[in-house]
Length: 510
Image 1: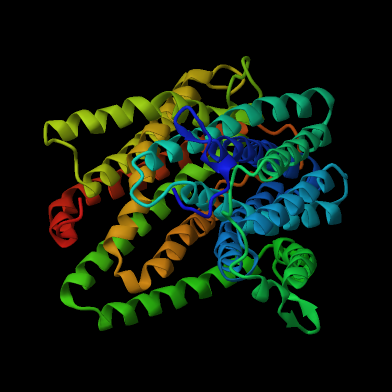
Image 2: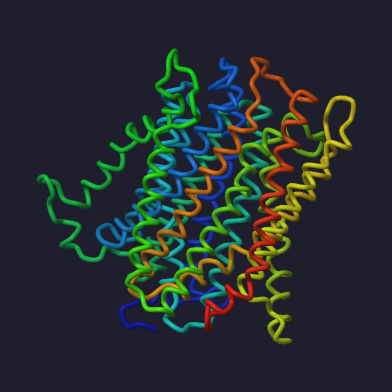
């Protein structure tokens, strides 16, 4: 152990640094707040924020996609500020405070307050999310074999939060009103911050997570120390982000929706073009071996973007499908958002043991095959929803079992792809641009929400009836799910067919 660590940091719980368990509960409650709010978000927009619009689904899809894209893009900015100026501790506190404000402001029934609330959550997530995950890794020395197990324990906290939050927040919203559900999400965020603060007070983190230097924190810009200026700018960014989110209407005549574009769409298209141009420049400069591996890293990122684009429909189109066309008796539409995390918790260890068993027999599939199979599972899951209409009752409602099977298959696909993707980006990227490629990987989730928005707009139901559903919507959804299934299965088959070639391009990377 390092001599700089405080004695309290050397204490262990279940064979791991005790700081892990403070971070475990901090992240569990932060994800509780995040997923609890997300479970309500689409339904709240359709039924409250945009209830007067016939194009309520369209507007909801536009805002939801912009929110999701900015939430994930903000982590690149927040992570960079943490690395160079604030350090992880200050960034986590700043992010947690901003997110708490956002969740509590959501409890105010007002359209301006709504967009400001989302903006605070976006800004806060940028500081909180990348830093607490990184913090876990700093608790272990280089080469410590416990690190992977520690990260597994930590990520289990994420899924416990994602499982429980929609159940509780969804129940509160249904029984007492939307804002009680949002309020509980805010309490969850404050609880997470409390656990983190307790860990610091007890010294369980040693000297981890401090700013790079006090000189950097104290350095004045415009006469203000950077340690003070950054929180000020973070709070001040909320109105600008709110403006971007609320630009879901085009500038056409009479405020009509012209082409489905908004400012966030345009920004992400420009970012995408810039990234592709820079990647082309890097590949031009790279040697042959680097070029091959970098090409595979880009392919993996594209495959993951496609998967997340379909997966993240769970918080938007699939939630609306559940509300309008699924026979719900065990849970509400908002609470169905808990199913993915529930299956991840159930399946994570069995699938991990499967790979271990296959590895001992020298049969563990290489990464391209796992990605192809993951996309196939995603496609089959949507095909299950596509055929659900054949079992609809007289009210146009399909059995809940179809939704349950769909989430089971989608979760299997996620476990085939997500755990291995991040490590492969590190292995395949030239060392001089690893940080850049990690940023591109995280941005893939932001671009995935652009896919979510596009699909959501295509499957938008135009109606002034708040209770629209049944056969009026069933065909639209099942037809859309069938198309998604075809694209996902097609992508999966394409990856599997190309896997021998991709495997050769990867060289010695498994």
